[in-house]
Image (cartoon, rainbow over all chains, first blue to last red; front, side, top):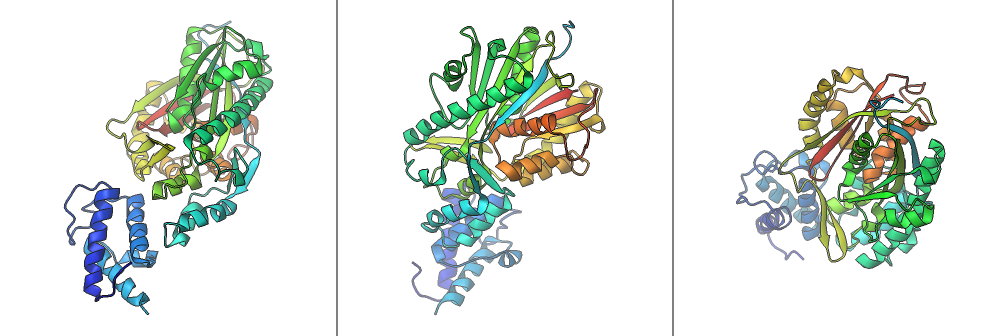
Length: 91
Length: 364
């Protein structure tokens, strides 16, 4: 479970989870920096992007929809989105 | 007698197991399983709907699958179901070809979904009463390309023995490979896409006279291997059985390669794509079919049979392309109101683990 904390703390956790999924589940060897683009730099295909989204949804108990995806280009964008969703869903 | 005449595809027999489940029923059955690990189950339901499969015919009643919790149980179920379904497909093919079972000289058996030793073709010698001097070639591991490759290998054999008859049998029971505990995205997609079925093709050498006056003949075949693409598709063989390896790169590989490969193959025979009246494409999935259509610039509805087959039965792995061929040979409908005409060319094509493709040039 995610421990309560400010949005920035969740963003850092999300970044860690993105790195874990990319490294452990998707065998991405490159160092994953927030500025890297998911498709243009990391060359993730549709199934890999889906694996990443589902992994984040499971870890942070939030839903990421297609409309969200439109504004997400980089690793940092994705971590920020997860952090916002977590904040929104908190009672 | 004309010794130069290419081998004929005399008939296709198709058999689907009796336990029909529509896609929504299957989604409902999977939902609780997915919810064990996944937070957003709606997303996974959408994945199952996106593969454009209306339902599957399953080897076993749906309620019997949860009890198959080991590789042994699943494979034992595979042997039982594959044996009866395979026999049914061969019987139908021989009946359509109007050949007695004793006329079969060689049985090629293709699968990637179960294993048996003696292999299934041996079991069918007993069940069908095939000759004791029948030659058998079981082929495991080709996956989705197996139906096309099987026709090509059987045709190669009949070029050496033009007086003989061969049967190619493909049995794929994909539902019995499902790893219930593997909740990865590739496995969830596979569980929505792949179905069960068997298809048998009777092939007759050029010296023989098939019962039907108008059957396609195998003019030429081509195997194409794509180096260093081993993780695009396949199995990881694990303690619990066959764990699917499936990459989203398949459609892009089709887009990059199939046009050049098809054009080069056809050009060797003095043909181009405009001369192909009948396209018989493996039903890889909606994205793969779209990639075929776009890369090959096919006319609208050229792959209608493949789309329909995918919708009706799911992707049957090696059997899929044989189901589409059977549709074309048995009940021509769709783009052509009339059956294939004498002289018409057709191209049967499939891709599978390796990664690789097999192309079969047909002429009626």
